[in-house]
Image 1: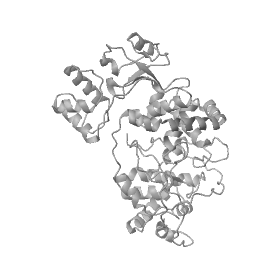
Image 2 (image 1 turned 60 degrees about the vertical axis):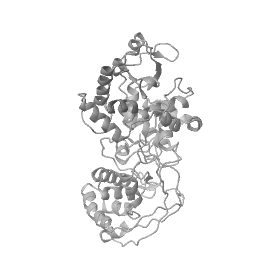
Image 3 (image 1 turned 180 degrees about the vertical axis):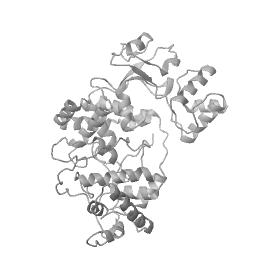
Image 4 (image 1 turned 135 degrees about the horizontal axis):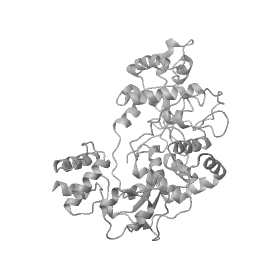
Length: 452
């Protein structure tokens, strides 16, 4: 739960187009180093490391040139001279042109580009948060966000209904992704995207990934969907109302307005909302199926079955019912989700829950989207309660947990700090042997028990 989310706009600073000099030799007319006004976003709160799903890109057809961009807020972001970056731009230019980027597109894209040291600083110093599920949900599904979501859903009722009709994706889930990703468009991110991606590709820690994103961004510019001054986003490359990375945009963005552009950057969120619905639909969203349902477990529930996948009617025969005491409808096979272990709220989740996770591979994120969508649609808050004082493990603690389990003969499939299905199975086996509820939950208490 350490993802990147845009926040409030910072104070005014200056961006110099240093990279212009690096490509001047390849242009027919020499450009002077200039100062340009763009808007910066300062990302200090991060909720999940995953950037965005990495889809298979597709070839895009050219679209008509876009209209002149609307005026942007006059906030500036600092770039600085960096000879190594300038040399890298020249070398990258050859690789970009080998992939079909024209000299004109490259020159225009880098006309205001600069090395951004703050981007490197943020990439290297991402804070690790250990919020409980309760704390996380209280932030991402706050009363304010619910109220604003209902207002936005009402304001865009016709648009969201048309999007649902075309793609079959629940309009409230689409609105919830919008709320989670950019607070309904208020925090879309205003970092100059070409500068950010070029900086991260040059820096090299994840150079191959960010160079792939940079090539995709140049291809987007070449098709005419937007211009480099309008192409802004988070410092890590996510763009628009619903925060697509460039390769996801290439594969899934749609022109729902019919103006010839897939414009996810505009103040009008229509194309961005439709693109999100198209993304979810192409990853298997099933119309009419809920993402999940809050359930009650019987007092004597055997947590060895927590890993099972059954029809809700089968779960009901085991005493797993909704909060009203009735069997959950048989919308499809369902898995039991215990985001805070045996002491927390339980859910039966369906395939659509996993589809939401294709947008961001986190149970907590998918739970946030699902619950926010339900609340936007008029549902009440969860009926159950969360345990006090519970938090998620830090990465080093998760590694220690895996190491200690492995030492005791419970294989976790590796010690990487990632709690996957093998680690959860190892936890359940250890819990069964220890005579405690085998919920498979990697709690702080469990780590303390293993240490002892």
